[in-house]
Length: 188
Ligand SMILES: [Zn+2]
Image 1 (cartoon, helix red, strand yellow):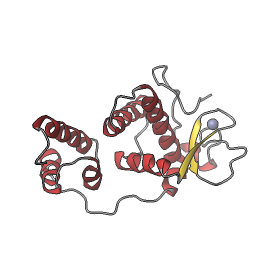
Image 2 (tube, rainbow, N blue to C red; image 1 turned 90 degrees about the horizontal axis):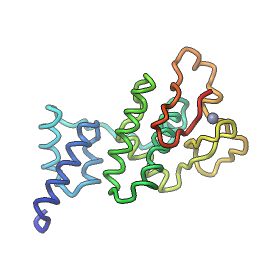
Image 3 (tube, rainbow, N blue to C red; image 1 turned 30 degrees about the horizontal axis):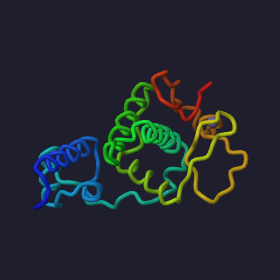
Image 4 (cartoon, helix red, strand yellow; image 1 turned 120 degrees about the vertical axis):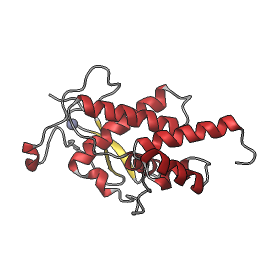
């Protein structure tokens, strides 16, 4: 940080604190900020009162395809892409933080628990950038959903329009309020 201005560093710290509060893993902060590992470690302990988890990061693309995670991931990507298109002045990190906050808000409004962590949301964006995952429209509701790249989805129907039978007892995502930019799926 020797050549960086104090203001720039303060901003990095502010972003890091926000990310930690949203549950981001330390590795993600190292990747996304220019702060040293030592400073991030200190910051992490100060914000959460504990040491960061040392477990493996969730690298698999399969998680995003399973039923409920897919609905949450697709909802998040809908918000992310809307913001990326309409708030072009945001930095990548601001975009992630803002999209994730909106995702939490949206899930809260529908009375569901968030399933997608900010660390997974970060991976999701990277998997889409790397073309390992892509978005495909549901032929029933026209919402866009996360799928594996290079698989054929001619008549794709999403997990909201055609939930698996075991989903009967689980509450579905409730109808989206009008404030939501581009709902990935209309619920009828
Ligand atoms: Zn659908």
